Length: 491
Image 1 (spheres, rainbow, N blue to C red):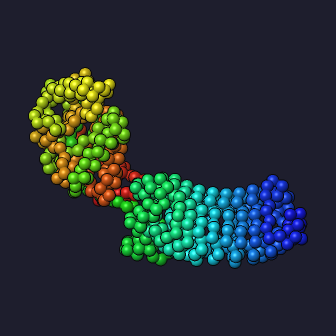
Image 2 (tube, rainbow, N blue to C red; image 1 turned 90 degrees about the vertical axis):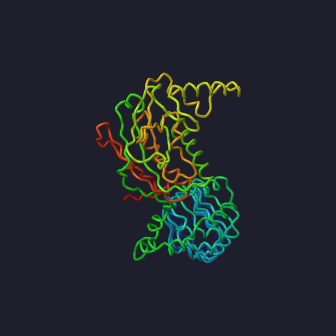
Image 3 (cartoon, one colour; image 1 turned 180 degrees about the horizontal axis):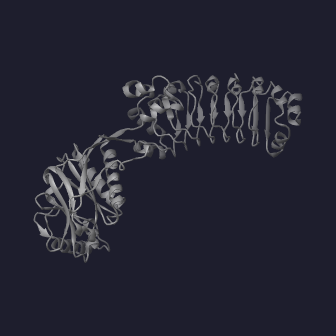
């Protein structure tokens, strides 16, 4: 018998702590001393910082235990008898190697504090009967679904005050979280939460705002399963609920329609010398409000600065399809004095060289007026066409210039709050993949901006001999990660 156990038995102790390298050496030599479990008077047992890998079933003999501390060991398997201890209020199994737990964890009727942090758990049993639970720490595990942590029985945990689920793989939160009326602190940091507004609140550690947001915007798990007929059908029989729920993670859809044969882009060989690559698609049935339109323009500017690296990587343009008209659209070049365009927000047509010269003059005057050393707005992109002998441009069916990348669009096809169908244009010097990647990012951000499904139509691009060069989006495009919450539906 270990001397610590012998002393505890002799003195009728109610508390015992075993820890450190000496205890580990004994466990290596002869295993855990089984007489430990004869100390039936113990109400506190701590066995920590050892290499013990399993707690024997004999632990059930310690039927007066109220606190069991087993952190920082090598425990890979948790005997179900631990969860049968009738008086257990505090259980700490943190910093072990647990990958799963027995289903009977829910029988801990007196449990107040449960710490399972820093393990390898990827699922967790429903705690419907643990109504006294106040502190639950599941941080630093591999949990993927919040409902598998508490599911629709969250309301049963109305006493919970501290809930730590940080450093997991959780994407969505259940509405039941708002039913934990005594919740004072919830930590969900470092999870791939899909809802970006919610994620921001989480990073700011604002528990009340998180709960309020969940109450207003997150469906309850039971409602989600029963209201969604397709999901309910998939969940019937032997299908795993987790799989069904993962399929419900998609918050938005992008519907891809086949190309409209009435519109196609033809690339002339001359653009290979200046700005070779272009990607286009049509965004259908956009519904702007004044506020959304303003945010849409701001989004385009932000993407130009970040994703497009201030237009060095690519340039984005949007055109009102009704104003542009259907037909053959040409991507070509002109010498600076031959390109004719009515620039965005300008009242008259001018040549390319006139526009660039005028913009340069405006930039210099503005810089002097504001006493700045740098240009702003459209003026900061002028260096990209400095000294060019050919300017790239897009012509509509009437041979009017509708785009002069990377400088400006034409005023004749500009979008406004009444626009419903939009041609998205992305051009680049670098590669076709660059154009496609930027276009994908634009479409993704539009979905997030409008917070609704999006319908887009493919556009075909042909070479100068009208041989098909590419189509966007093809089946190799828009393959977003599940974290995006966007599902692609192809016709």
